[in-house]
Image 1: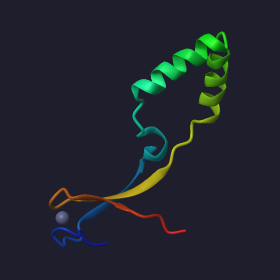
Image 2 (image 1 turned 90 degrees about the vertical axis):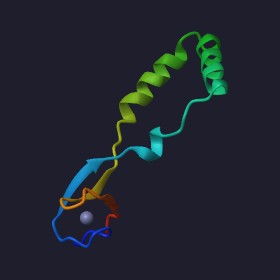
Image 3 (image 1 turned 180 degrees about the vertical axis):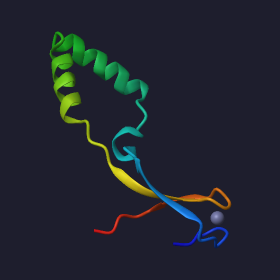
Image 4 (image 1 turned 30 degrees about the vertical axis):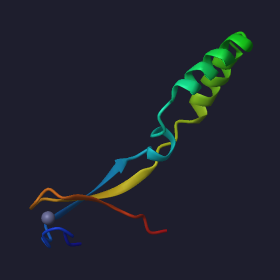
Length: 81
Ligand SMILES: [Zn+2]
């Protein structure tokens, strides 16, 4: 393993949690209004659904990250399957 920036072999491999795929989407105004509507329309049923969804949605994606100890460069290593 070599640093792609400075070429140093002093690279630390570590595993990080990245849930980028599910949580990076920003909630717009439309979604806030829509959700408020849903809560009102379903008389709180949405909250129950939301709760149930939250328990089953605790899914984290682990990604391997390499950190160069020489220059501090950090990059993601794609998992080999
Ligand atoms: Zn480096």
